[in-house]
Length: 196
Ligand code: GTP
Ligand code: MG
Image 1 (spheres, rainbow, N blue to C red):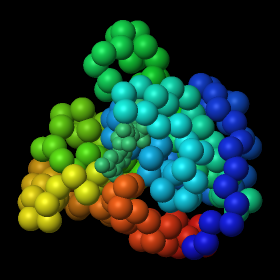
Image 2 (tube, helix red, strand yellow; image 1 turned 90 degrees about the vertical axis):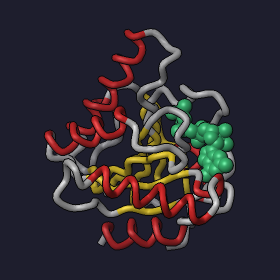
Image 3 (cartoon, helix red, strand yellow; image 1 turned 120 degrees about the horizontal axis):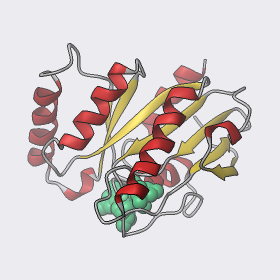
Image 4 (cartoon, protein in one colour; image 1 turned 135 degrees about the vertical axis):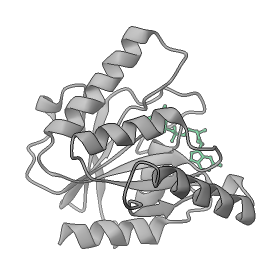
């Protein structure tokens, strides 16, 4: 799919203030610093459309981008950042939960996982919670450029094994690197198919 136009629409903390749910929507969620905003910029080939940062907790709002005037891409705040107050963490969890449960036009939720690490409790619990709420999701492993191929494959296999302990099937998944631009075509093709 060709990205002809990518425009910022609105940021807010309240799902009720999001754009009218009249077009397909795809949201990126995951732990703080996992690379959600970077991945959005990479997919859209716009360097600074979504705000990124080396320190976690950069995105604190629900950010809507309108793509080709046909579908929305959404950058969500990251969960699980330890260095902020408990009340702020709960506030962010609440924004994510309400968004995920109330956005009627959400075609697919992409859950981003940092491929460098072994499966983390916080991500596994988040996916469990999605399951309980009947929210389908697709996984994107991020920062693939940071690992050698064999380690990359090992980590993905390890992740699959871990998922199979609580899921009957492995969800669809992609492997990406925002610095190397890998995974771009596959993810955009996946979105294009779902749009139809
Ligand atoms: P929050 O908004 O704080 O939740 O973070 P985020 O998930 O949006 O992460 P962001 O895109 O801001 O990236 C966090 C850091 O990881 C930045 O320093 C990025 O440059 C780096 N980063 C993101 N994706 C990649 C990647 O694919 N490869 C490498 N090497 N670094 C990445
Ligand atoms: Mg971000």
